[in-house]
Amino acid sequence: MNKIETGLIGFGTGGRIFHAPFIVGSDKFTLKKINTTNAAAVLIAQSQYPNTEIVETADAIFTDEFIELVIIATPNTSHLPLAKKALLAGKHVIVEKPFTLTVAEADELIALARQQQKIITVHHNRRWDSDFQTIKKIVDGKLLGTLVEYEAHFDRFRNVLKENSWRETELPGSGILYDLGSHLIDQALCLFGMPEELFANMQVQRPGGKSIDQFELLLFYSGLKVTLKAGMLVREPLPHFILSGTQGSFVKYGMDVQEAALKEGHTPFNSSDWGVEPESIWGMINTDVNGNHQQGKVESERGDYAAFFENVYGAILSNEPLIVTPEQARDTIKIIELAMISNSEGRICKVG
Image 1: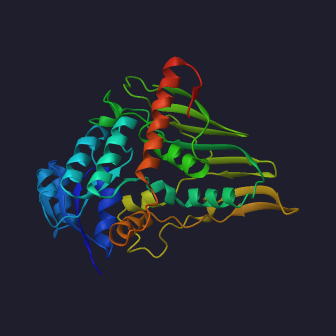
Image 2: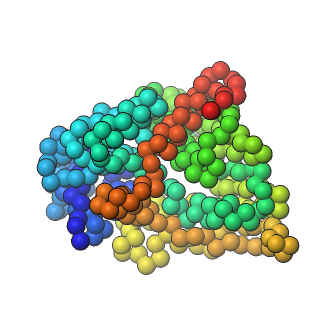
Image 3: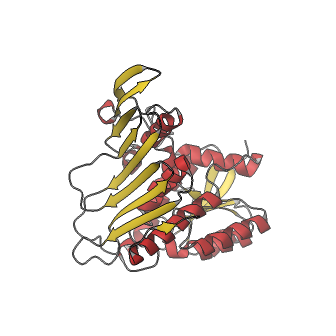
């Protein structure tokens, strides 16, 4: 089997938790180089991946003729320049979400990738969350009849600011809308496509905060309202998903288990029960299907973050279609841009 030699730029939470384990554990990739200058990150990388070279500059990855794929897991402001350099160096590219800061930047990278005849995709891994896969099965199967409301939350509780975190500064692309919001938006667009209109309200709720740490985003479709919410001051867990249709409802508490497992050092390559949610957080359905009343727990589908990387491998070597296209990732940025306009002007925005 041909292995794709890979370079990873950035070894913070994104690179260390969500990318490196999937590259190293797979039989389809080789993690040749990691670029980081953070002293603590260097020590961790050297300890966990002794066969991988740790380099001080991204150029050491771009100029390596054997590296075919570059993963960019760095602060949002650097996505555009690093992705451009990687494409111009003849590399395929995975960009950590969100894709870019603006639609114009996304269009620039899409055009450059097409010109260079290289693949560029965005790490919207939460399409492979167990609960979202379950939601998709319910929606696609019309188990609730005609869906009229879809509500998704991505809540946390941290009532103090995180020191030295670029996400909590006033930098472009910081704040919870670009961070957690991009997951919620991508999932909604995956299910329903682009909305007709949207309305957004954003807040800085924590004392001393400088970036958005709470938002509510409403997406309006014909006959369907989508509510997306995230906040940092939600101590008592709220439902993660609430779906209502003409025949019934579905409510789901609890988050996909893959992130917690990764942080504990588990991977899909060393865990037989990878991505399997405990019954305690399965969702509840109450509906009529083909004239039969159904009420009770719905076993969650199995989560599978590795599927994203499997698809990238197939796209590079076998010309398989990308599951996460750059155009889709650009649409998420378009929703974010319009949400910021809606919030600042206090009005509903047309999307088309």
